[in-house]
Length: 487
Image (cartoon, rainbow, N blue to C red; front, side, top):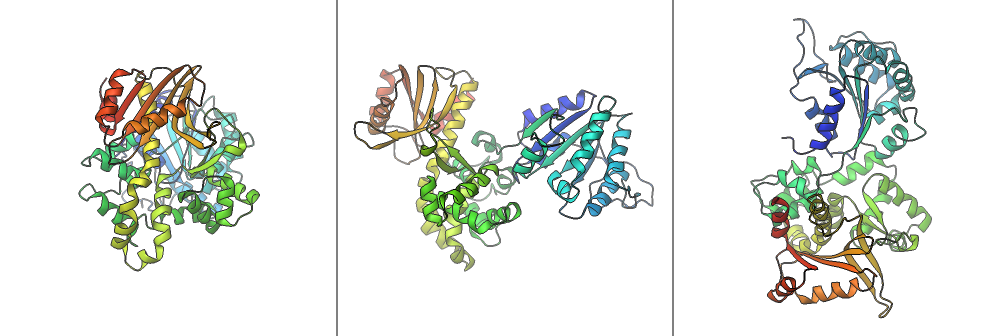
């Protein structure tokens, strides 16, 4: 079942309705749902009538007629240019025995010719594979677009999973296709609130746990069995050698990178708490400058992010965090226990490693959910001010010389929102409030608002403080969800 992506669907449908040449670039990490989005856009596929003797292609998607949309859906493969040309010829011809075009330019020209008379969609999925097989494809498309766009009714969609390739070789200044696109859609994982549609039947606490191990990736969310417990799902997906996610990060790295073992070491170091460049370098045994280059590549792939203290871009204070929650979960619980899991000790690993450490692991997950919630709350116009900037803050307390952190900080002018996020089965008390007050005083803002987010709720004393102070807001997970559901 297809969930979400309404804004992206609306954009594609608006482009289709224009009846003029349109060119969309769709990209995002593997498994994030790019192809599913395109298929939803061309939903209701009905193959055209064929003669009795025709042999419909099994290796390539054939011409598709969809709710008045005629779509040619071609998927590039990691093969030779000729193999890709054969597949494209079959897509255009609608038959395994379709005549072979002499070259890609002839095939592309045929599509532009067809689009002179009727509205067509031409989709190239996994465009980086095709571009690697036939390096002239971007230039050939560019020439056709420049010469035929005024008379063409073609809607061209290029889709790819290689983030660096799509951003540099399709969208970048050096690309022949630069400046030709009508729209670019970077498909991101679902937020927690978008992922909830996949997790019906689980409690809100369980939904956080499941989101924390899938990272909002639709492919992984679809693998969750709603008839099983969270523990059973974790065991089946991650801790069983036959589980679909048992080797997922390792396989993805092998597809994208030349030195997966080095990247393995870097990601594992971050997953276990190393956040500064020197810490990661020390744990991995890499020189700092080499480590930085590997980190840059992981940032490009969307697997990690580089953070600076809110309002401060001083390079030496930057830290690295895993952006992809599934990778973080895998490197925290699966990778260090591979030998035990291979020996069939999945239940032991769950009981000794996962279960007692799950709440601590979910702390950063809950932080991300709280940030997402603040954005959703802002959309409803419920924040005390327009949160122009949002991030984390860390620095040195000039009085105590201790290192201090603020989980979430949003600012605009002289206004600031400081937030603390606690994922614990214990109710949050006045000590957390006092710490947040003291940390907020380290920064100079005149209009201060304090938010505290908690898994279970708050002590009576802290609730009384909230009732007396308008600047203090307390949100349990249940209240967070209720606030978003109430207009």
